[in-house]
Length: 526
Image (tube, one colour):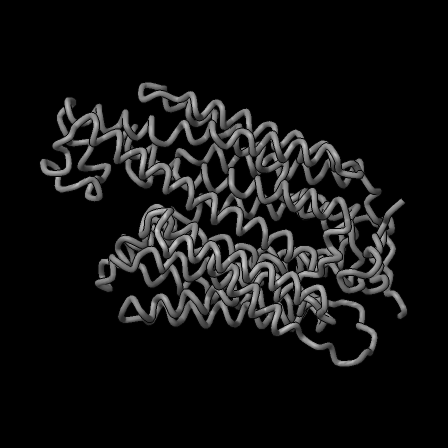
């Protein structure tokens, strides 16, 4: 096989075509990241108008399931058939789901639209990262990955604000219509500016359909365990235990099938590379800490400080601002120095420190102090998240970048989903127990614990309000302390990274063998 190689040369300025491509890929990532947050403020109104409040969890879960399942599929297929057609197909699928959601007249079709969105959305972020890897060598890629992290940070703030503005203004359906012009820009950028070397002719690859089916089934079972456990069903119920057992059995079957597949969705040979395994495991820990914290702090701020939903989103700006600055600076430093091990290592330690700080908050802690602690958390997240992806990409030749990127993001997404679900379940259980203990008649007097809203709690007399907000404080914040060992574990894993030189060329290299064969060749290895 002839390798297509592009050598990094000194230029007076960046290539304009690359700039335009990168801008288009940023729009693609914006689509993916906005979709994770824009519904957070609109969803109560959406399901209320569609008479489907009881189906609200499925509006979120359906998208998570579909996108998580398709991540490794997109990575593998794009490695086999090329990035451009697969990326364009993913964007079109996502836009089709957006149209279904925008036109829906009932919650069932909303869920269907969210599934279609997820089928496309699973490829948006993965293929954007892989496409950059196709045109920018690892040594120069750090600054681009840093900007990608900054886009994620900005969208995390812009999403809830846009969702609230659309809901209160032109209507919640615009949370979906807004995707169409953004998607069109992304398609045009990919079509005109994503120019890659021609792939060598080879036999038509055989797709790993059994692997696709098994990873879909195993992921579905695992996500449902995290989503339903402790809320819809008790953790020890036959349903949850059965789903957990099914996830294990299907996972074992998946490993067996992948070890024998000609073109496995997640080649087991990936795990022969130390950096891939360590960075992926650390990324899973980061995902749990990120979604377990950011997912519940806005609720805490509303309930305990009494601020509105919009203001609670504004108070999260320090976290996203810290992530934006740290991600951009870390990316530039990695590109300038070629050293990348220290950034994620310090990042997870900073995250662990911030979790300890957040766990120490009290009901009467000043809001600026809370914001400062959130800013520290954002800095740690920005120093680690995108650099971990770069480490994985640097460990494999270009022919395997899509598969490796998708695999590491898949495990991070599963960890994030489970972390968010488990934190939510523990929080809800502790909150119910504490409120019942302190004000036993709360359920009868206030219409039940499920009816608590920030406005309701804020209007209560102090003899009721103070026990409730104290219960929120004591139910949630200690959980952040429980997550500190995850930061320690991630740091220990990252200590053992082997800091391979960042490759300065784009070398397609030989294809990786199937699992069980020799280890995968490493681009840019010493």
